[in-house]
Length: 167
Image (cartoon, one colour):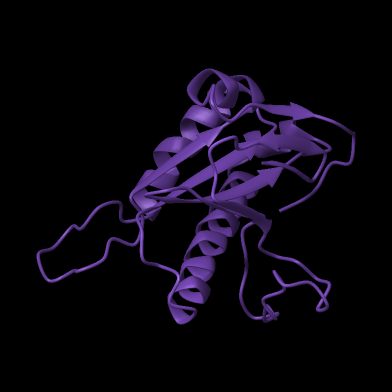
C-alpha cells in the first residue's frame, strides 16, 4: 500500500491497512474527530501482528533544533502525538496489537541519534511493571530518510515534494 503524507511517499507492501490518522475531512471513513486538546500522529499502519504509528516532520530550518529549547519542544510534541494517538486507539478498541512508533524527521544523523535516546526515555517501551497487561509502546525509532530506508527496506520512503512543516 502506497500513501503520501507531508511531502513523502511510503510503500507499506505487506500492510493490512494504512491511513492518515489526523484526517481533517469528516466525510472520509478514516476521520477520527480529533480534539484540539489532543495531538495525533500522521499515519497508522496495520500489519498482521503489529501497528505502526508514523510521524513525519520536514523542517524549513533543521539547524534550529541544535538549540536545546527547540529540541526539547520537538521531543515533547513527538511524545504527546504518540500518547494521544494511543489513547484515541484505546478508546476505539484498536490497541489490540503491539504498537511501534516511527518518526521520520529531516534532521542530520547526530540529532536523529540524540532524539532516539530522548524518545526512548519518554515512552515506556514494553511492560515495565508486572501489573501492566498492555504495553504503551512496543518500540520507538527516530529516523531520517536515509536511516528509514536502511532499517526498513520492506517499507521504502521517498521525498515527493518540498513542503516543510513545524512541530
